[in-house]
Image (cartoon, rainbow, N blue to C red; front, side):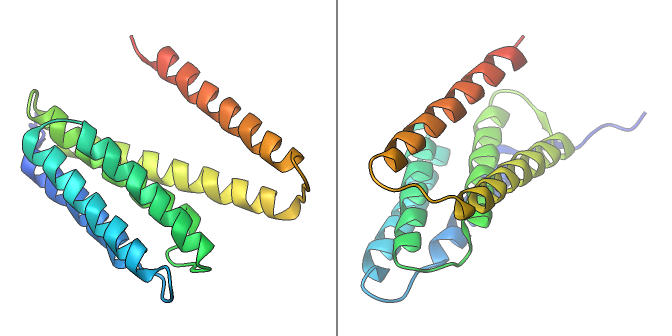
Length: 169
């Protein structure tokens, strides 16, 4: 029986930093560019600090900064890399960073980490892509748009918490 190649914490950390750097390189041109550059590279630094120290706060803060940066890119009218692709890359960064932190304590199989990362990133990107297509056709005016957005965020968060609790042993 062949033994599986265990993933090292440094390999998955380098991959997470690489994904964060790819996201940092996408910057809109125009008045939003300085803010976008600062946020993008701040996220890379936060992720690096998290992976070097072993604490999860930097990884979470880096993901939040990248989400805000993606929103700023959307406000600036920049469609690169696109909302679905940006979501997939952010999720891949989180999965790889989490695997790196987990690999410090227990050995992980590299193929399992790769499959899990691709599945989460592709699933998240697909969900965001489908949601953006569905929302693009609907028009809501006035305060109803904010209420619909809050309700959708609440339902999505509730579904994630429910699924998370069902998947844990």
